[in-house]
Length: 314
Image (cartoon, rainbow, N blue to C red; front, side, top):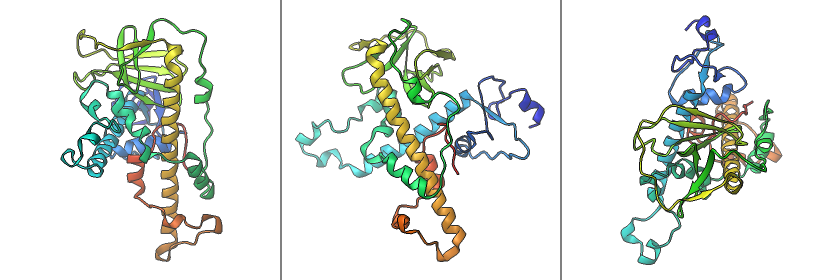
């Protein structure tokens, strides 16, 4: 593709002209490249230095990443839990892991489930210590941070509020009477998708700035008016946002830790390869790192890392 076409702001993936764009070879280069690896697309920076990707494609790839991750989580669950026939009746009634949301309209539970699983949680402080040892830098953010945005306001507009059912863990956003969940979190924005996006293949989307002062509505619903679910309780923004903020922080902290941990694994692999078959010697304070898991870096990036969060690798 010619440089002239990139100057016309054409997305490199969907070829649509857009103002909402992310340079492939900009400050988010490492994160965008990780996304492109999902679809096995290789773009030459020498030939296409000005290539861009639109926000819609970023969201689509993020959704694919989370779907892939959920498949692996479900597979691990099936392999590590005994079949129902071998569990006594008391254990069957124990609500330690409820998976019935996989067949429900509460898709937000499915998308966020991975980030809150105890066995998948990394210690961010431990990951950062490893990053210091391997000299993996953290790029400062150019815009407001999550902490800057997540400040509860005295009042909010009345065109949005939240709902949650008695068995739900996550809130549904009601924006001008339309319901969205399946939240995908980033440092500055949360992407809410239609609650019927799978059942009716609906692409309707609301992008909320993380201080909930700005919203952008994208695409139309693929279905007409549907019967509203009963038994949902309404929450004002001031009631719901403290918990929404907490979930967002928790998931983003894990995505950051997972991404940074993938950088550590890649750095270790690069050092091992550079030393050849004899391996490489660790310093005193790095002793013991050799015995840690050295999963294939690409696999770690695809299955464990957060995406498009404003950090770079060394």
